[in-house]
Length: 86
Image (cartoon, rainbow, N blue to C red; front, side, top):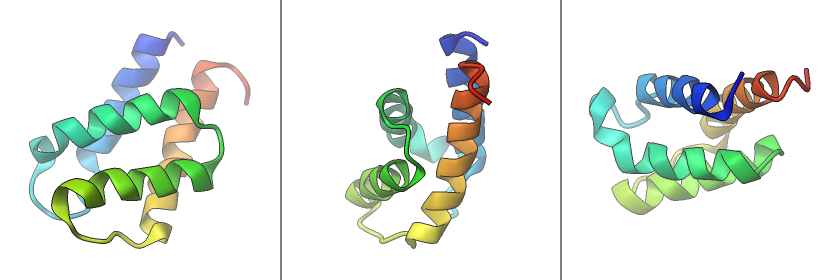
C-alpha cells in the first residue's frame, strides 16, 4: 500500500470518528493535522495524545485518552499495513 492510499484510508476512518457529534465533514483541519502526525509517530500513546491536543485546541472540549487510544490503534494498524510491518 502506498502512502497516498494509507492516507485515504486514515482520512475515511477519521471522518467516521465523530467525537463531538457535529457531523462527518466538521473535522477537515483536524484530520489533516492528525494525518501529518501519523506520518511521524509510531507509538499509540504518543499519537493518542496528539489527537486529543489537536481536537481539543479547536473545540475546547477534552476527549478522554481512552477514546483517542482506540482511534490511534486503528490508525497505526493502517500505517503498519501500508508499510508491510505487520
